[in-house]
Length: 125
Image (tube, rainbow, N blue to C red; front, top):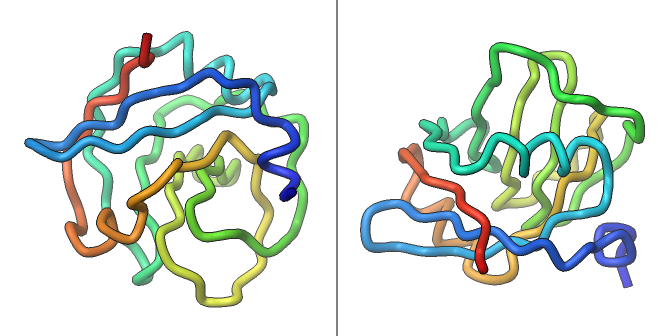
């Protein structure tokens, strides 16, 4: 079991773009709770580095569990230096400072094929 799965709270969100829908389960931490408090959100995600979809919030989210490490495909993380919400869809072996938020349940590779997109994130009831 990965560390992301171990911290999983079962708070499920729906991520929609056009006629596509993905689901993610969020961790139990201050960053995920701050994100949930902002829902529903519509965000323009930018495809960066051939590995991630990213949105930069204007204001910082709380991030008190940041660690320098590698990542797993499907993780959703927060990168504090640029206030970035990041969905990691491909592996390149890089390590960086990140705050875990959650995990895409399945289909994250499709997100990479779609590329930059506007998504709406809502709580899944």
